[in-house]
Image 1: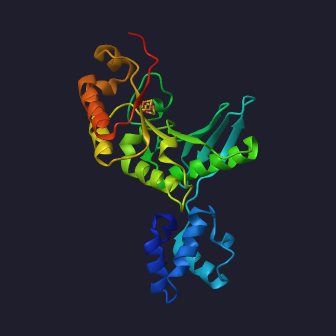
Image 2: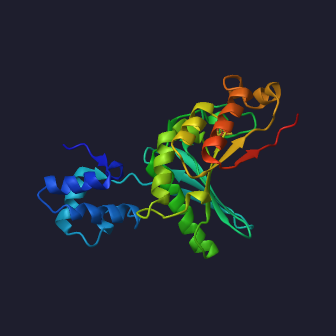
Image 3: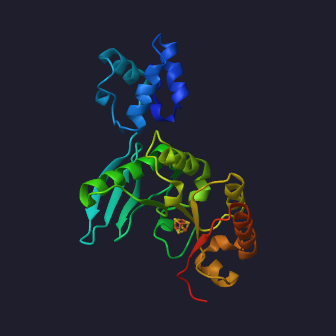
Length: 266
Ligand code: SF4
């Protein structure tokens, strides 16, 4: 029996190669890629411009591990909260936040979280696993669809501020943003995307070196180490001195401003 792989883990090139290996034309890979990423197909049967034989071939080799919105709650102010079921049954949350000028998706990057911020409900769940890039991308697509349906326009902004610390899942977050911003994905501007972090100095420097083009927000909550450590115990490992140095490095390299989130008291 062939063990089935998630087809969305394949690049367009790998899909083209697959079809060539099967004695078919490489461009078939482009068609499938378009179904997966631009048309958001949830199963192979939906790929109606492929022959039945091609759809069966895909079915025999691959699965599409798509997320499913298990429960959607809509408030009177237009906010929508999704409980999202992953292929292995785990649940994360994503939220659509409407204001007069923008519609923002708040998405999760991990199931649970390894950090222990005292103000945060996710901290109680502990980290179970990282989301892969597709699972992050799917949350954005689901909210974009809801925005069009209930608010009459597409999503305008994205914040990585749901469950998990995005910089602890850096590679997959970056891959999801590449997909969100590519013409073969949603074609959104990186300027409309903000990654919110509790502050992992090494990764902030790496992001600067990688010349990322999205925005950065930092949960500061206090500018005094002792106070911040009480709110965010993680601060003991990465004290404010290291965080400040990393943020200065970010600013020097990118010239992009940083937003600080602050609810603590000094
Ligand atoms: S890093 Fe974010 S998700 Fe994790 S415990 Fe802190 S606030 Fe919660």
